[in-house]
Structure formats: structure tokens, C-alpha cells
Image 1 (cartoon, rainbow, N blue to C red):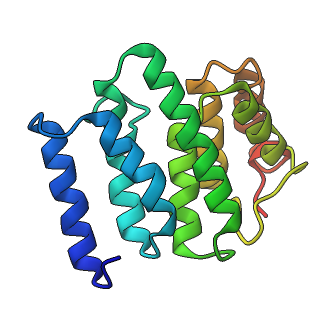
Image 2: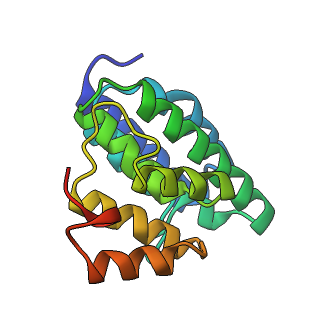
Length: 171
């Protein structure tokens, strides 16, 4: 355990550079993150490391990009489950909870994730302390669309046609 946040951030950065340089496997980096990142108290470090783990757009280099298709699917599911659990256990409304929310959206690919995102949009489920603002609701819709969820199109259409009602309403 390193008490200094700057030192921890530098360590994570060095580990990532080792992956890029081929000195550390992406799998080892992912395992380290799955083990140690949930204990990280600094939201900025959670955000920075999470962005190195998975990039849903595919535009940035990420650890899962270095894996074969089966391993990629496995580690995204592991990260998805970890992010949801850690987000739900984080201090309600904290920056750390928000960082894990973003990580969850980035990693979410499973049918279970799609169902939960749909439940959040329909207000049948909630994240204690996290207000689902308009922007966050659009992020949920983008994740569903990226995942090819059949519900995404109708939900987006409803949000565009009636932005003050249903899934896109403000809380």
C-alpha cells in the first residue's frame, strides 16, 4: 500500500507503459487492476486506470485490445461486474462512485448489463446517491446502442420526440 496518491498514479502509469512496451502482459495488467483498483480511494486514479483497461469506442489503446476475442469478452465481463459492485458500494454521490459508473458504462457488454441499464432508464432500478442527469441518461442510451440492444432505438426515439418525458426526463 502506497499512501501517496501521486506515487500510486505514477506506479499505474509505469505499469501501463510496461504493457505498451511489451514488458508486462495486458492480462497481468488487467489482473492487477481487478485486484487493486477497487481499493483505490482517489477517483482521478480510478478514472485514469479504467481508461487504460477498456475503451468502448476502440479509438484509444486499452488493455483488452491486446487480448484475443475470448479473453477480451471474459475480462470485459469481469470488469463490468467489478465496476457495478464497486459503484454500488462507493459512498453515495461521491466522485469515486461517478468514476466507477463511467467505468461500468465503458465495460458493459452483457445482456445482464443491458437489462440493468434499461431498468435504470425506466426507474425500476437505481444507484443510491447517483442522480441520473440528462447527460447520464444519454450515456446509458449510448451504451445500449453500442451493445446493439433492441430497446435502444425506441428509447432514443422517445427521448428525442418527448425529451421532457419518459427516459430522458430530468430528476
